[in-house]
Image (cartoon, rainbow, N blue to C red):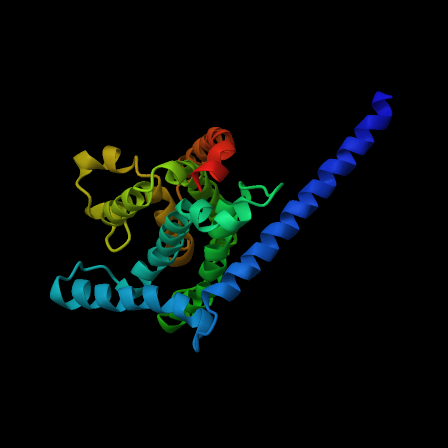
Amino acid sequence: MTQIRQPALRQINRRKLIYMRDLIWELVRRDMKLRYKGSLLGIVWSLLNPLAQLVVFTIIFTWILPLDIPNYALFMFCALLPWTWFQTSWTSATVTIVDGRALIKRPGFPPGILPIVSITSNLVHFLLALPVLIVFMLITDVPLTATVLLLPVLIAIQFLFTLSIAYITAALHVQFRDIAHLVGVIVLLLFYLSPVFYDIAMVPAQLRPLYALNPLVPLLDGYRAIFLRGELPNVPLLTLLAFLSTVLLYFSHRFFMHMSYVFVEEL
């Protein structure tokens, strides 16, 4: 009897995974269509914000307050793209349950996929912006080396980390609507506490152990390593971040599912 049940259970689990995959894909497509519905430029708008920031910071830190960083535009763009993905993903995933109340109230709908959909939608924008980064590299004669093959690893680690904290804030935001504003403040502080527009080497040596506690530090430097410097990123720190993100994801997902039983009542 047990031998008969095991293949049946595996078949059920396989069908459930396929259903979840297809549902996530359809919701991502829906999100992309709704976001740019009625827009003339469409998805081009996703590039304008980081490009506008790039122009402003390049002007400021090249001519007004020079940081003496070679090839500054490319230097910043390598970190600005993943930073934008993190910022937009976390802020949008935090409010995704409240904004998706119509879906949450449907019987049998799995609420846990909404933060995944939010982060995946912004990942699509990140991937679409990568060709612009490649063009920057070609213009500035920076070679594209084999280290770029590690890009999926960095993306996976960043996805894990973002999802692990998004589950916590998304669940709390249902009951405490101030969470979205708190996340906005934290994101603003993290922008200046992360090596987006400056180099890690500029951080005073006595502060670097404390500075390294920021999980975005090895991530952003990792993107610069594989694109700009053509070298391996900090493997030990990234491995530790991947491990801690996986552990946090396990507990944050359990917390999210525990809180999900009151979502309908609170919404």
